[in-house]
Amino acid sequence: MASLNFIGGEKGGVGKSVTARVLAQYFIDKRLPFSGFDTDRSHNTFTRFYADYASPVVVDSYEGLDLLAESFEESSGGEQRNVIVDLAAQTAAPLARWIRESDLLGLLSEMGVTVNFWHLMDAGRDSVDLLDKLLDTYGEGPNYIVVKNLGRGSDFTLANDSAAVRRARSWGAKVISLSPLHEGCMVKIDRFDLSFWSAINTRGTPAALGMLERQRVKTWLNSTYATFDTLSLTD
Image (cartoon, rainbow, N blue to C red; front, side, top):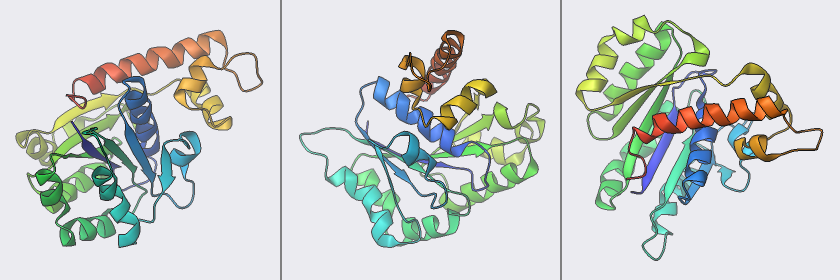
């Protein structure tokens, strides 16, 4: 199934880029073709770690955003392509305007492309309020994937009890939890600009993780993949 995956959450520091990176590695390991787009002008984190798959895009330019959809038209031979968009903070308004004025959801529905809005959350009130705004903006049409990032908080009672999460669930949203990777491993991965594949397989260089660090990354990936499998992204 072809899919367009907006990895958002609107606020900074909720784990959007890490989620985009691990979703990219998931598609790679599942041997599913995809393109990635990085909207963060300041850091280009997604592009930095997956340069062979991701490219920067200007979110407040229609010409730039059009590239996200046109990648589906460029697919040939019946190949089902997926797209991952790592949304920077404060991009909701220009993105919503582009989607509305282009009738993107209607067009992609006709093309058989599933649109997934991933909403990354920390344990705070802001994430709940922003989920409410996301649901107000797009209604029941697209798929919603609500991600409670356990690396950004452990008590999600506020979210679990919120009207926003209840509404999302009533619309068929999947609510999942993303476990954090051990901090020491993530620090080394970020320091040496490693993809998750490189983190597991690189040995004998100054950038290599230790044996048990590689095992922790592998274990974390397997756990995250098992969670992603419940979303039926590859069906």
